[in-house]
Length: 354
Ligand SMILES: Cc1ncc(COP(=O)(O)O)c(C=O)c1O
Picture 1 (cartoon, rainbow, N blue to C red):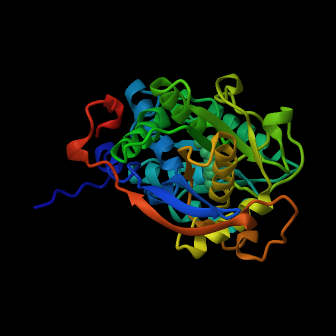
Picture 2: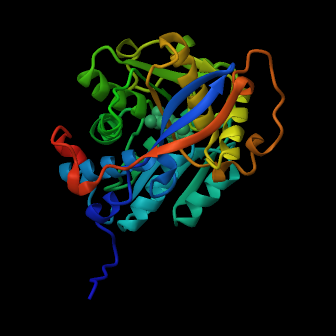
């Protein structure tokens, strides 16, 4: 008989987070045959890469005693992190409060609520994203035993990718007889690009690690909030504390319209991914342009497209001069299998084994 408990354990939830498929996408770019790799992070428990970080931060917090069973959790987030903490937190028996800017997509707000979390929307007048962080800190100060993951400054965020996403990419390419030449990822908290980057640089110091940001809102390049963009999940309003630009290679900029058209093209291939995935794909191609057409460039498809049904992703996007998406013809994709739990390579770090 299967034992049924009222709450899920880390061990059980870990089986549903990470170890995602690696896609090898075949394409023609300006008539030239190319291949780019992307981790299909939409296969995670709640459909986004943020599950990796949320699970790891909660596990570390249990280990250090900063999160006690049943204690409330709150976080400031632009959406996917809120969905991850709402689902994983409630699965483990924690009440969850999410502070988020009120302009995020309706789907994100509804999903967080449907997992049982409380959503506190923060207007531009209240400070938008920075206001959400301030309000979450005030919540922590007045809530006894309350746990604040602090995804923008918590090193466990990048560690989640150092111990899972990075080793998975390395192992999945190794099975194909390949090594990555470059990794690119849009910067929200920067956890993905910093954690994967550190792992891959440790394995091969020559690998290029590029942070990606919207061309319409170049916060990494200017250091402050400038312009507006539609790539939800990246480039919030500031440079997060865990982002160390001096440990990374050049920033790659992608126009949000180009990212939208790219995501729409990926959907036509059956890959229903979000806008930041389109941006990452364009950025991967830009990185390959610098390194040569046969360079092994890897990125992540951070989430699926279902959270964007009410956004411009579902509308016709005007083409602007300089877009790369219109010069890409997607031909198809192969899938590098997930790593078999029973046959992981010895070189995989202990943190990756479940
Ligand atoms: C859709 C989407 N893409 C990309 C990112 C960026 O990931 P990271 O926070 O690891 O930089 C996020 C983060 O929330 C996201 O929600």
